[in-house]
Length: 247
Image (cartoon, rainbow, N blue to C red; front, side):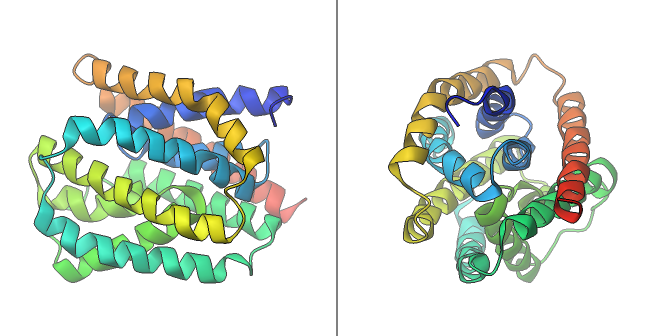
C-alpha cells in the first residue's frame, strides 16, 4: 500500500474527510472512507487501516465534546451497537472479498440516497426501541465499513437535541464503538504491523482533518459539503457494486 500511488490518491482525501467528520463537522461524511479506499485495496484491509486512525481521531474529538453528550441516550444506544458489532464479527468469515465489495457498495449507495432524499424528512420523535434498532444497524455497518453515521442519525436527528448535545452524543458514541471494535478486529488478525504502519503514515492527515473541521464549522456551508459527500457515496457505491458483480 505504501508504494501504491492509487492508494495515496484515495487515502489522503478519504482520511481528511473522516477527520473533518470526527470533529463534528458534516457528521456521517466519514462513511465515504472505507468504500473509497476499497477502490484501491481490499475492503477488509481498508477497514483495518482506518480503525486505528478512527481511535486516534476519537481521542482528539472527545476532548472537545466531552461533557456535552446525552448520557441517557448513550445507555440506550451503546449496548445495542455492541450487539451489532458482535453480529458482524460472527458473519465476517462468511464474506469473501467480492461479497464485501458488494456489501460496501450497497451501504454506500443506500446511505447516499437516504441522506440526499429521506434524511431530512423524519419529523416524529422515535421510541427507545427504534433507537436500539438503529444502534444495532450502526454497530453492524460500523464494523464492516466504519459507516455507522446514517443509521445513528436516523434516530438522533428526530430527537431534536441541541446541536452541541447531538454532536457530543455522536462523538462519544463512536469513540466507544471504535474502541470496542479493536477487540474483534484483533481476533480476526486485522490489527497487524503492516496495517499499523500504513495507519501511522496517515495519522498526520487525520490530525489535520480534525483540526480543520473544528476550525471551519462556523465558516463553511455544511449542508453543501454534505451533499457533495453523499453524492460521492452514490458514485462510489455504484462503482463497488459494478466491480463486485463484474470482477
